Image (cartoon, rainbow, N blue to C red; front, side):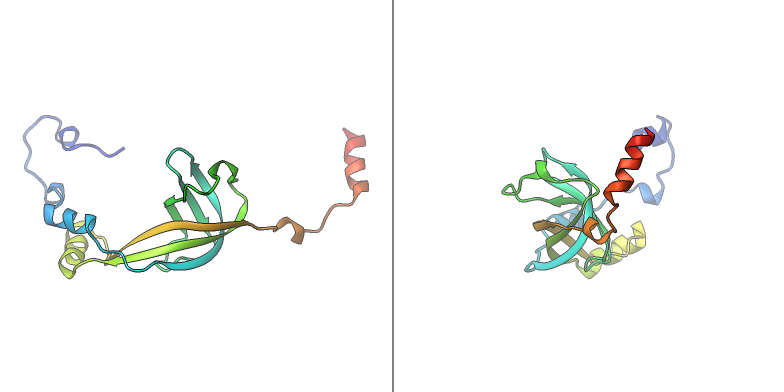
Length: 155
């Protein structure tokens, strides 16, 4: 868990390090008001890492990277029209994802790079549009019924 400034200083007076400066208000406002472009629909296969039923959000991992290079998406928005209680963790799905991108100003990009060591010039928003359960087990050779009987007899 991140420590607050008061926990870091421990109540003693210390010289403030440059990395402890508060995030500039103008930069925070720009991030909050970034205009996202038209969503692009991408299709990827992957699986659920975590499901947050109350928030209608999920964490997923996809096998092929998304447009921004990531393979894990945390906090992916799920439409209320989907029955999130039916989602299965660890099961392979084909996801259709709306990806919206908004560009940051050169000033904010430079601030993030110089003060926070973040190489970031855009903000992305991901929303699950559709999903389809994949039948990957049918590709595996099926065990014969005699093997199943032998296991039962041994037990």
